[in-house]
Length: 507
Image 1 (cartoon, rainbow, N blue to C red):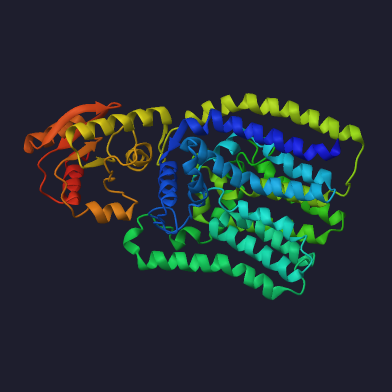
Image 2 (cartoon, rainbow, N blue to C red; image 1 turned 180 degrees about the vertical axis):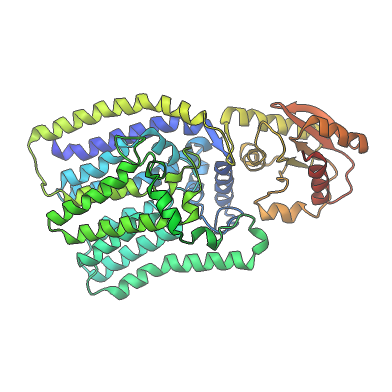
């Protein structure tokens, strides 16, 4: 029965995750999700527009890159773009669990296998979104298997490679990798192979340098910057962060969804246990990880967010559950146990899985009731209906461009701009007024003249005032409660027209 414990827990966790995706993620799409969906279709066509998230100087879109080859299989994008980040999240848990099982450390493997099941539905929600929260995690799946390599040079190289790629994909992976690297050095797993470790660390560094060079050479293509001051350290922020760990670690503590601070306490509590076990490598590793967490709380970027799965504070510490599972697994000495313990554990797992499945609905309702701030969310059915309606209107009116306005609107402008080309490929192009992330769209339309332009959004009172001064604007029936106007006979470049419209409609 013990040999079935790890696979059974992995299966329960996978079914639980699938139900969370089905009841939350596939039904709703956010503004940033739309950009990733758009990017996946570009990569599938062999187009690599930028090294990072469109319009940014940070954040590689690994989810889009992984999803691209599967877009041809006919999998609905809503499922595909939720399954991919889920797999990226679960991969290291599965990898460590199966590696421990392979070596006969069943209970150590069970600590990794059980962790995704024990975490609350909100963790499943936020790590099933293609928003770049989890892109550093999948590379960590290489780490346990590197330990099986007898040649220390290859072992060190693979360790360095996994860590450097994780750092490049998302620096939040340092929460785990700092401790793991410390453990590897003290436990002498990298002994005598420092050159190989350095070579392994190079690929991630090279990718980062090349990507930053691309951004420096093309500053006009970056409209959303991560400035150095957002990553600077401030002692006052450390104090503030330590006093609000429940918020920073929300949904990262197994069994206690709202008591995020317990995750930090649990991490620190493992240190004296490691000392009592005379395992200095684990003790120093956990201490190093805790030090990284404390230091990171001093950065302003770490304090961007709130208690909402679409932009949570805890996205910065998404590796913490993996770190806790590793700490527990490292301190488990027994490899065998009475038969009844495995049976009892699996029964508990089944009962808790039932509890989790029941909890999904309440968590879903709570998250959807949260106020939307600078991240817009809409149900996918409404978006599909809106896209179909816009496509039909543009074809009927002969519009050559759709300009969603960031003015009062029921449907966020970013969703129409970035998701519409995915839901209606080959249809009328879109151009986001004032905040277009796609530099190629700016290159194509900013200075060109489009004779018939469809505008969506804005207040009708201000539109009516604009129409009185320019009869070329024709009012059409609205979409989802939004205004819709067609500019006919245009002779001016797009950016001039858009600037004039935005100024006229400004509150």
